[in-house]
Length: 585
Image 1 (spheres, one colour):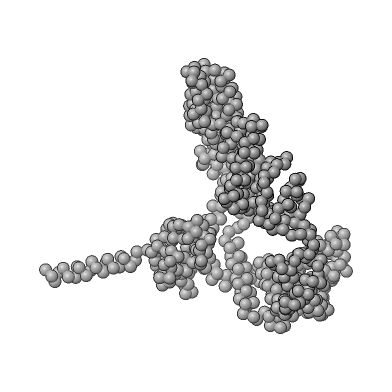
Image 2: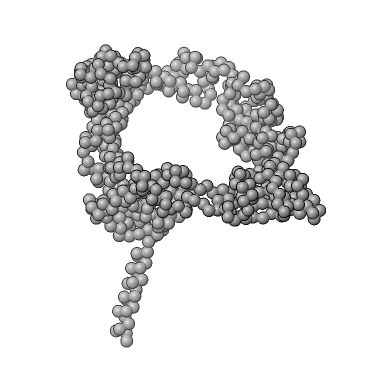
């Protein structure tokens, strides 16, 4: 007996262990370090993706920005995208970017810009310094840079009648006369004012101000000079000291409470103020950089010689193919027609001509040549071999090559033909033609004057629900009946009712409508729009185009998955993400 049971016991134990070991994990920010060896994707070329690497990619994205669990279906979609992107990178390594003129042109432009920036920083900006004494002298010698008009840093609470009408208590405020509303606004303003004794001004402004723009910035309106706002703003605001707020005051727009956060008197800003010396330091460094840069760049510009392509010098450059050469700089770099076109418009505008002549064209080439002179100097001095430059060049090249592959996944000019669009409309007609388009409720009373009164109440902001709760009269003859019909079509009600309902806008109320059952008001809760073929055509074209592109992306994914023998040896159960602003990876 024991000889038989022992192997079965161990077999059962092994099954339990294997099952436990294969259970997909739930990844979170706290446990990803444990899963660096948990391989979820493997492919040829040595490509592997660990659970930890995948989590870090997802955590750096905006998926589930509020935090929470990503389920398996979403994980699979993201994982496929990550793998396709990586394999597209392998495909990009095989690409000859020179075969794609515009992509290669954009790559070179971005790389040249970066190399110029590195050269200018190393040769000019990093070479200038300024000690404290120099900064102070610069500040004292340039009062023009630090002279200001009298101004204050303003925070503001604004309260208006319109703001009350649009508040959560709008039904109540809309029922008041203008005189009553004015009194309510004054009381409301002083209630807000009393809150300032217990709560920071910025908090109160954010909660209660009716000025939506400044409210979103906690009432901040920024630095303000005298004479910007209407009276009596200046006399109120500029009488305050930093940290003080005003009593409420009224003008033609409503009520205001002003808080002075900071103040600058007219004249030179004192050196002791925060940021002044740092601003002076930056200005001084800029001045020194400009002086040194002029010496270095002028010496480079004097060496620029551009051999023009005489054949296109007297031609409208916009009619020349982009790939045609326009000039050669110092016998090294070639300027093509596309680059010349980028400058042509400004030259025509400067000289007020419809086409540049040969002399203007040569001046244009000379200007472009100056940029190439900087590039040539950078290469001659080895800046293009700096590790960070090499890394950036490779990154930009790789991005350009991947961009080519992305664009070639499908034909960007493809669109469905008319027969295909019509066939889709007919096959999905029930999605575009709504048999019951109007969601209706209606109110019934037995008195016409009462019906008109209720209509006025609804137009002032009340709903049928509000009406049903209001105790307007205890007379049984004034009973209000409310009926919700749901969605209706022309076959569901009499033609007169449907005609009135059709002419009433969504969230609108009909005129009083009489039948033998009483007087009615029709309220439209929702309206679904039927679309004929011409109306739906654009929508369908967009849908079919998106489907075509998605199908082509799927074809590309299937091809590279097969070509690189992609395997998914393990799965993930789910990912738990922190809110986006707290993610550290």
